[in-house]
Length: 230
Image 1 (cartoon, helix red, strand yellow):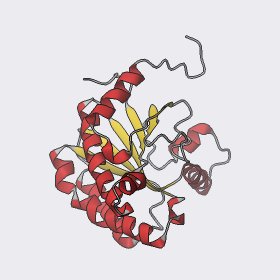
Image 2 (cartoon, helix red, strand yellow):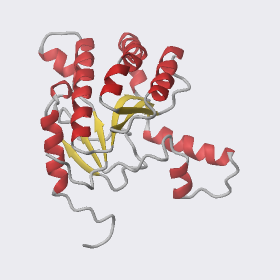
Image 3 (cartoon, rainbow, N blue to C red):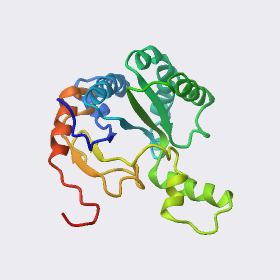
């Protein structure tokens, strides 16, 4: 099944790892491991559906409020698995890019991010953006501060757009969320101004290509007016 051509950029808020693990009497860490497997299945399905960009909400600026043990585990997972999956990215022609404030991340995570981005920069199959230490409000603030530091006299929407983390990545067309949660949780606030939304019951670790097919089907029936009339 080919995706509606207009669905160029899909954003996914991955939710339900902890609940998936709890249902099976497993530690939350097991849910995060299965969540990574789901991410791999979904990004390949998105590529096969001709989606050009996909952005996953991996770790938010608010996730630091979680237990020290869980945050430490997630940072360790990022530092080892991000670059550790390099063969998978190259085999499936996936370009990895990261948006978010990476300056305050542990050195091992920053190095993994930079090495992975560099190693996959020439891949053309799909651009997979990982939102790490990311918050929509934080990104907008950093964009404005960057513009001011560069001598801007007046802040405009175009100027903010040009100073976002990945200004060359087009605005998201559709944002979806798993685990029956119906909020966007500070995700892609600037670029989601006219994004379509959809929320699904299935917990994130259970997602696969059928979910991408469902999203493509649903999006194909949406009518986007961008404030105008049709």
